[in-house]
Image (cartoon, rainbow, N blue to C red; front, top):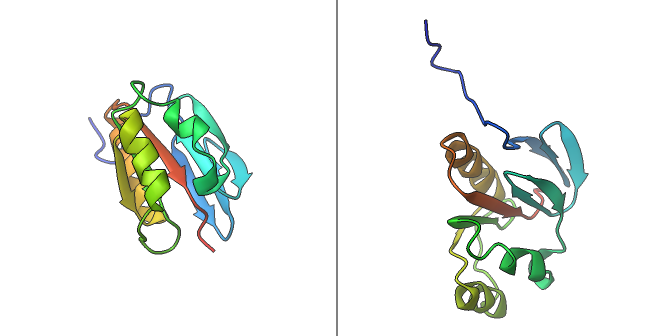
Length: 119
């Protein structure tokens, strides 16, 4: 029998939950903004910390950028730098970005999420 609620992430690390100022990824709690890939999660410096996102060029098909509690426009220099590097970014509120990341991770897609905390 196959259960409809079975979700497998392979060796990927799903986003398990979040709360005011923190994320739980693969059972580990991280405070503040985070960058999550199938390989792991790390603190992220927010819009001023482009280097780890640009390093994803060619390694992921899409980067979900979570802008906090509500969707917001990305700062133009941030958006332009991602575009120039060939990093495809989808912008949404952070909870939606986390959910979408998990769905595509379960499908073994090459995804990452850069998430601002939900305060």
